[in-house]
Image 1 (spheres, rainbow, N blue to C red):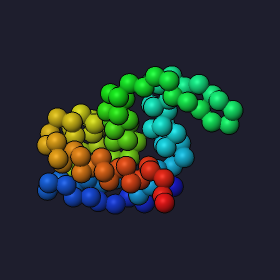
Image 2: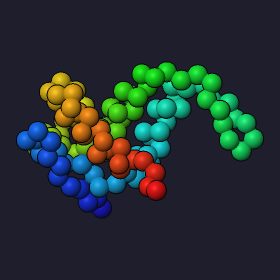
Image 3: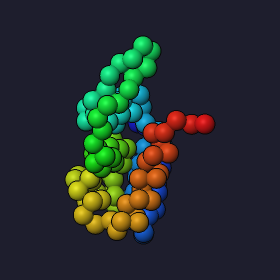
Length: 106
C-alpha cells in the first residue's frame, strides 16, 4: 500500500516527505535516543543518567532517512545530499517539518 506523501518546498527544492510516521518509524527514530543514553528504570518510569547531546544530530539523520522520500526527484543518498547542500537555515526548516511528524500532538 502506497502511503500518502506531500511536497514541501524549501529554498526552491522540491522535497517529498511522508505525511506521518508509522509506529515502526517512530520507534526507530526514538531508539537512537535510547541507544545513546544510560537509562535506569524506576518503578513505572525511567531516569536518564547519561546523555550525549550530540545524539540530536543522529536523531535528525534518522528522521530524514525514515521520512524524506526524495529531494528534487533524487531518492538515493538523501541524508548526505541534505547535509552537504542545504544551508543551515534550510536544514533547520526541514527538521522543523519532520519534528512535527514525530512529536506528540497536544
